[in-house]
Amino acid sequence: MVYPAKQHVIKTFEHLLSRLPESERTKPQVLLLAGGVTPFRNDTDREIVFRQESNFYYLSGCDVPSSFLLAAFQMGTSLSKTPTLDLFIPKAELADLMWSVPPPSLATAKETFDVSNVDHPAALPAAIDTLVKALPGALFHTLPRNSPLFPHIPPEYTQQVLNAAEGAVTDLYFLPALQTARLVKDSYEIDTIRKANEISSRAHEVVMRVLGLAVKGKIQAGSGAGVDRPLLPGEWLIEKEAEAEAIFVASCRREGSVHQAYLPIVAASTRASTLHYCCNDREFAWGPVKPHDHQNKNELAHGKTKELNPQVLLIDAGCEWNCYASDITRTMPVGNGGKFTPEARVIYELVLEMQKESFDIIRAGLHWDAVQLICHRTLVKGFQKLGIFKNPESPGSGSWNSEEAILASGDSSAFFPHGVGHSLGMDVHDVPSASKPVVNPTIPALTLGHESFYSYLRLRLPLVAGMVVTVEPGIYFSPHLLASIRNSKHIDHEVLKKYEPVGGVRIEDVIVITQDGYENLTTVRSDVPWLEGVCSGEI
Image 1 (tube, rainbow, N blue to C red):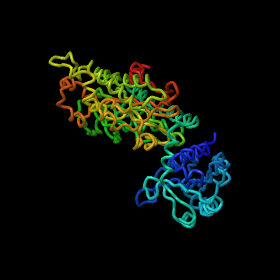
Image 2 (cartoon, helix red, strand yellow):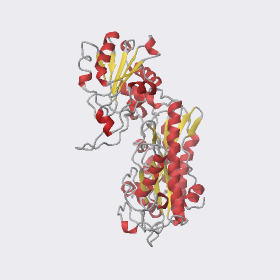
Image 3 (spheres, rainbow, N blue to C red):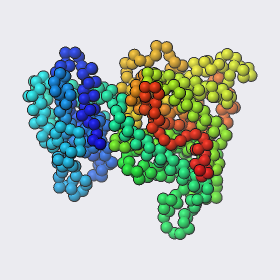
Image 4 (cartoon, one colour):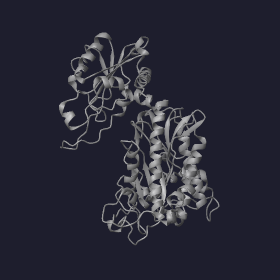
């Protein structure tokens, strides 16, 4: 199926027109943007993996480096239904043929991409000049110029034709229109995101099953097969964060995914309390550890005589499929025969309850702030049952330890500091300016809980059918965050100490919003019986 580039261009133009001053809307509108270029390591000729700039791919479906796009639209004319969409891709040079895979031919590109015409970049100035003459008074739109966030349009392509005398050029409207267009996904995009999530779900399960094989003794420790040779993939133990990451990424690559959507987060033991822990370079804990002990003791690796300390392994990782992301987090037991400790289990089950309560209310029309609040409310109730938060019936307590009083204090933010989810699409934290506008009249007039609940919430809008979002509650025992509430009157600090070694638990699924609810695109399970069964090798 051909990527629906023209459909995305029309959608973007519609959002663009709604942002323009009324006097500008009947004018011809032209979009000009550059694709990404192949990056290189600093001061070397060694390429870094190329991934197309998201906005360019959204409007073209083209993943060829150093390409350009020119699109024209005019309300009330044939261009409103069939805008012109011209793609400019590099010409294959001899060096390209010798050193790397060359760009496609013009004929192949014309068959591959949903565009009107294909040419080489040398033809771009003439194409712009033709549009300037054919569409008098046209307004040219670019992404923010002189910004390091977007690919640069070389001036030699534009300086002769885009000047004050020939027509206006602006970068005020294009990016907001693009991000708003990208916020709600079409069926092609949802299917592509579903594919990425299916691959990533299987990769999470692969890691769990390798852990389970080791528990059952089906992977030999030490010398592997007992011969003097490198260990083969089926003989790998997972006793380091890096080993879990390697197996996850290998599973995704094996299924055809080229890129991870973001740096995998693979955090064992108390390191799971660091939200974006991307080091992934420490061993699992082989004994009691201090909070955030990052010591890496390689001599303990691969089946020495010491036992793994019971701990959690938090993996937040997801691949891309054709430039569309997945984002899945699973927290699994390590050590203890592949079973959670009692403390880790009750924290895990509470996070699972936070996610379930979120799912129960999610539907089109609901403001995302309400999901954030219900997670904090569920956390407070759960902590009161565990005794971490006091309740009005606690010894020496009173109404100041009611559920509402604790919510109003903001103390739960020390345990759940981040947002419950975000928009997901071509980027894992998709379309930030559309997801959380600077001027946002949709935020409820009455504050829902404590203001700290929303400090890091990346989505603050009513939900719309077709939005793709993550639902990722978590509970963390970070010494840095807990420092702020060590003197809180709402907390039984002796009870809290019992749970701090858990480190952190997060559970994250990707869903698409529907009119009456949602569809979960994440297929790997997260219920405790299944999780422990797999990680212990019992199923």
